[in-house]
Length: 50
Image 1 (cartoon, rainbow, N blue to C red):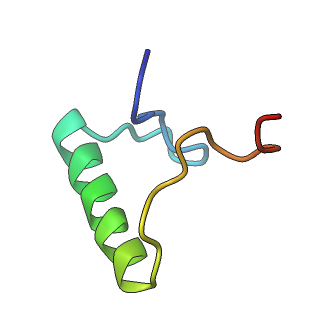
Image 2 (spheres, rainbow, N blue to C red; image 1 turned 135 degrees about the horizontal axis):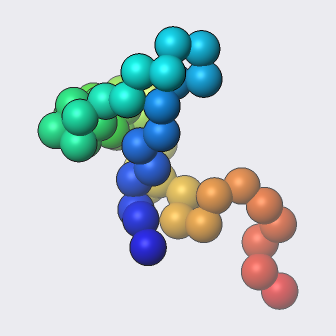
């Protein structure tokens, strides 16, 4: 199980270190909060259950 995917860049093949990937996720979360998002999606994109 993974909570944060870390896959190589499709064009360059560069893979971030786990430290750099986590830093990137935290920065994106801060930006999302500044833009008014109050919670990340828990189950990705798709139809709501039910």
